[in-house]
Image (cartoon, rainbow, N blue to C red; front, top):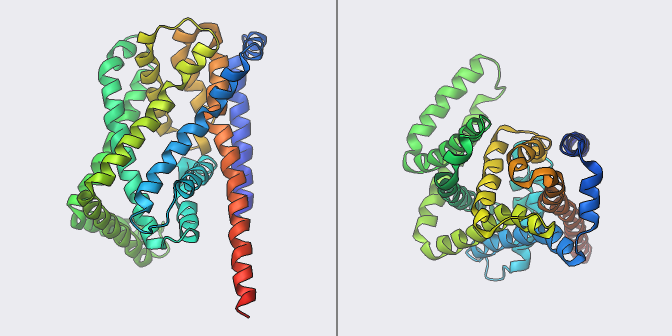
Length: 346
């Protein structure tokens, strides 16, 4: 059933991506293809591998946090977790599948499931906090200017508010866990009476365990200021690479942009990220391409479609392909290893 679900999700991604690309390229398809085909080969390779680079950078967060649980955790193992997490987040609705598989891989790498869950909580907390501070700065610098030009930015503002609420909720859970546990009990009772929950006691126990685990991890993490600082720095690099990629692509396509427009490009990229908060479809497919086209068309003009194709392929499709291949290889490796150990023990 899971394989069928993933296959359907991939089909949905391809369908929506195809529609979004048609929407973006329908007016100047031949011009876009000609522009991309005339790119310098080295520039094309750099652009296409840019997504691989910032995913690899993300892996260093897992390396920093993983060393807390095992002395033998290497950067390569962290990068592997990042790519596999990107793959499963990219093919599941609202990126819900990544962490489960990451915990599975980390268990195979020698990190207990409970420690892996704590590590993933720490990664999520640090990333969300860093991202919201980063995006808030970009909002302060550029949001008023762009929102005056289009009503679309009201949706982006709402996405920003949603992400801000998530961050506030994370910290209030850590500060007041008992309040959230009480609220959980009330919510479970209501959902049970509405016959939405089949096993309310099990659900409540699960929520309580997650809140307790999350609170404990926050307290442990708060004491490790060195790891927090390193992870924040890594995430700043990761976000900078992600938000600046459209500018790099524009330069490679000889679109006349000045260096002082780099901040505009990074701000617009962050606005695309905020808009994705409303798109529960795997990989935010379809919506991402449409929002990108709407936001960047004023700056990139007729070559917006070319920038979009390269940006989306670099940041999503290549990472998805590499992550999927790595998962199959790693899964087979650990299965063969366990089978060998089992045979030797007989």
